[in-house]
Image 1 (cartoon, rainbow, N blue to C red):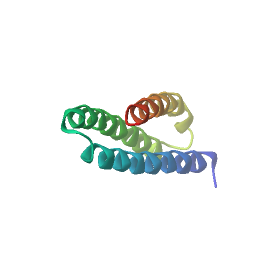
Image 2: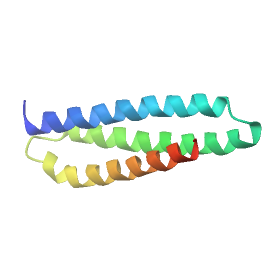
Image 3: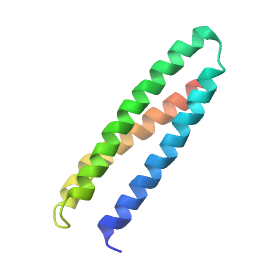
Image 4: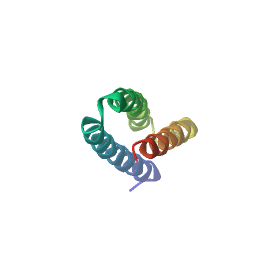
Length: 95
């Protein structure tokens, strides 16, 4: 397995984990008091938008040649870091 494939698998696993986390947050929001639901749903929508961006970056990576993928890696790492921080922030607000 190439380094590119290993990197793709790592990112896909993280995306899958974030999808599961969004589903958990949605369940918590559904059970929250009405005044908190709007805040929670807004945060979930933001996370979903970031997740779409991350998914698009992963698709770019998958479509990149073996020679060009490392050039994309920097941008992808930045997007992943942003999404990771947003998830931590959102998760802490749901506690």
